[in-house]
Structures are given as C-alpha cells and as structure tokens.
Length: 252
Length: 251
Image (cartoon, rainbow over the protein chains, first blue to last red):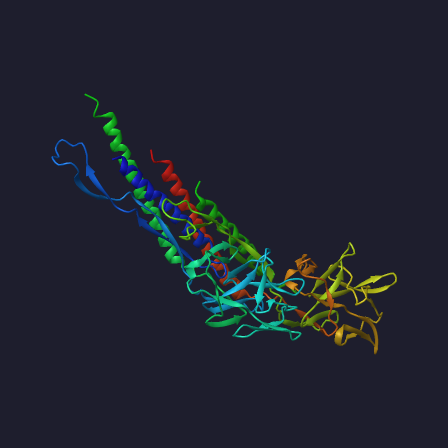
C-alpha cells in the first residue's frame, strides 16, 4: 500500500522532468540550429517480493513475485537531424548541409561547437557569433573586414580585400559526447576529440531552422499531462485506501 | 515550482519581441530608406536534473531553461529605387550612408535621401525632411547655389553650372548591422558598428529615392510562424499550470 504511494509519485516526478524537456523544445521551435531533445524513461530494476512472518506460509520466504518501484529518467537524447533550410539572403548567415559543426572560440580560449550560423562582423572585422565569440577558421579567427565576403560550398572564405581562409568545421564520431551549454553552443563531455572536416557542403545566405517537430511536441505535451494526471489519481486512491485502513477498521 | 512555467514564459517573451519587430517592419513598408529588422533566438543555460540512478552528466540529463533573443539585426540589403524626378531626392546605389548633423551636433547616418532647402539669412542649405543639416565630406553644412539647380556627379560631387561646390559625404561601417536605429530611418554609430569610413566611390542617383526593403510576403509568413510558436508556448504554460494544480490538489 505505502509502496503504491511512492511508486505513483515517481511517475509524477518523471512526467514533470519530461515537461521541462518538451517545453524547452517548444520554446526553441524557432531557434536557429536548435536540436530537439527527448527524455528516455525506464522502470527501476525489478525486485523480488517475499512473504515474511506470515503464519499461512509454511516454508520461510514464500515468493509473491517481482515488483518495480516506478520509473526514472534514464537519459536525454539529442536528435541531431538537420533542420529545414531557410533562405535569408544575408551574407553572414551560413548553414551546414552535413553532419558538421562550426568551431567557436570562447572568452576563456576554450572551443565550443555550434550549428547556428547567424553570424555578424565585429568592429575589428572578425566574423563572430551574435554574442561576440569568434568563429574559427583553419588559421584561427577569420578576418573578413566587412559583410561583403563569400563562402564557397567547401567553406572557403574570400573577403573583399582578397584575404582568404577556410571555415574550420568539425564532426563527431558519436554526437552523444556533446552537451548543450545554451546560447546555441555545445561542448564535449569526457575526453572525446572532434574529427576535423565535415561530410557535406556549406551554404551562404541560408540559415538552418530548428528541427523541433511542433506536432510531435504538442502530442507529447498532451500525453505527459494525462500520464501525470493518472499518476496523481493513483496517489489519491492510495491515500484514500490508507485513510480507510487508518480510520474505518478501528471503528467498531 | 516547476521550471516549465518560466521556460514557457521565456518562449512567450521571445515571440512577443519578434511580433513587435514584424509589426514595426510591416508598418514601415513604405518608409523611404527603411531597413527591415530581424530577431534571432538562442537557447538559454542548462541545469542538471536530480537523478536517483546514475550520473546526470553522463546520461545527458540536462534541463533547458528556455529561449531568449540572441540578437536583433538589420537587413541592409538595398530597397527598390523609386523615380521621383525631384531635384533634391537622392539615392545611394551601393554601400553607404548620408551623414546628417543632429540638433545636438552629433552625427546621424541615413539612406533616406529625401532632402530639402532651408532658406536662411546667409544662404540656402541642404537639409533633411526634418530640417537637419546634410553634411559634406569635410563635415560642413552644404550651401546650395541660389539658382537651386545643380546636379550630382560620381562620388557625390555637387555641380552647379560646371563648377563643383560641395561633396556629399557618404560613409560605410565595418559592421553596419551594429548601427543603432535612431528613428526617422536614421542610425547612430555604436561600439559594435565601428567608426565610419569615407566611401569616395559611392554612386549617387539624383531624382530617385530608395524604398523600404521590407518584404511583405516574408514578414507575413514570419507572422504566422510567430503566432504558432506563441500559441504553442502559451499551451505549454497552461499545461504546466494545470500540472501544478494537480499537484496542489492531491489531497
């Protein structure tokens, strides 16, 4: 009986966590280069229940069967499918039609990776993200001078004054090592290394939309709400039954 | 309290900002020299979930906190040129901005070349439709010949009867998307835009005005997408609220 109470509670906790993940997807349905997440839920390992101190059971340890104490969030999986391409006509919008990532240099010199190619040119003429972090080329920071530069399908950048560099693009053997940092950036968890280069092409004047599927997320929203509700009902039913046991059985 | 409530609210805020921007663009579909604005988004920081089994980082159990505006950038592509055949209408064909002196003496930059004559005691001056002085490449007010008839040559040279009397200043910026909009389709220099540089090779067309570069079809498509995103975020907010309600009514 008591077990039922907290088993149902684990169901509620998990659906709340799922709600956080689904909501993050929903609000980022219009975020450039955003990749949707999914929460994987699994049940706790089953345990064997046994009868103890039961006079009706002759041998010690009469088996009842297996039991699981609810479920928990096991893993969050990011879906790295490419989002739809949208033509913007802006020179500083660059999209990757392939499995690669741009390399961004942070304030502390660390490298971050992104699929969001909404870049700008800073006052010194370097290509940066909208938050002012440098986009890296094969020779370091990319000096484009002004917005009048061109990017070839292979990522070769040619600025107006003839300066040229190649966009540094990397890919990953397993994208599972990537963790989201926010600001459309990813970092590597653990000691995996990125692979230089990318299979695919670079497109200028195009941005990659979020790959969130609005219909799927709406359905998830309804589903998780109903599961949450069902678990809440189960908690209440457990509570009512306990209430009967506590208050009614003793009443003669 | 549930993270999802704030999370969904951030979505509403972000889409609201974009809705305001679209509204502003659409309202300025006929403003001379107006440049359309665009809002880009980014996800916000991630927290770790509390997990009963295993390591949250290892299992990528991170919890997003929402979305915010990454930047609001102007689209500086050229608008269409409109023939007005008016002597004091100018359009810059290519890169650059006219330089205008604000009433406090600071500089404004604009692509709106709808100029007028200000008749003063010591002569006629070239001003914008708001009465602010248009500057030449030395930063001086431009005194017009009394005839009022002149033509513009390459690089902005103003010529009266074969003699050049002034040179319209046209400047460019390293990062023009960093300019701040100052109203009346003019801009001010910022740290992000960098300092203005002379553009002596600018081509100026007399008798033309540059129309707004707002693309109505694109704006309306974006409007529909924004509305959908807003609706969905508000749906998520309501669901989060209902879930709080269920939790509060367990007994």
